[in-house]
Length: 126
Image (cartoon, rainbow, N blue to C red; front, side):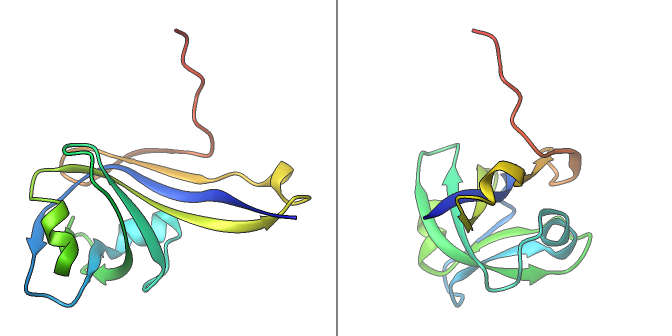
């Protein structure tokens, strides 16, 4: 049996640009892509924390150290500069691979600088 699991996420990225008249995609600082293990043209899911929108697009590389998160094309209607978003990529794993698998979780500040990374989500007490 194949299961779909979270491969990686960029948590609370801040949208820097929203370009409607641009071929669709999401441009992401190359260093952030590399840290998260997201490949150029890989499908990503974007969850807009600010307005609740959720949509699918693909990643393209922006200049390293630019801190750019640019939502482009039709998706530009779903995110504006300043919005905080979560960018996720998923993977298919065989049921036997699931036990050893750990996602890459990259946490960002409001300037899209990595604050820390984890491989699990800590359990929070109620």
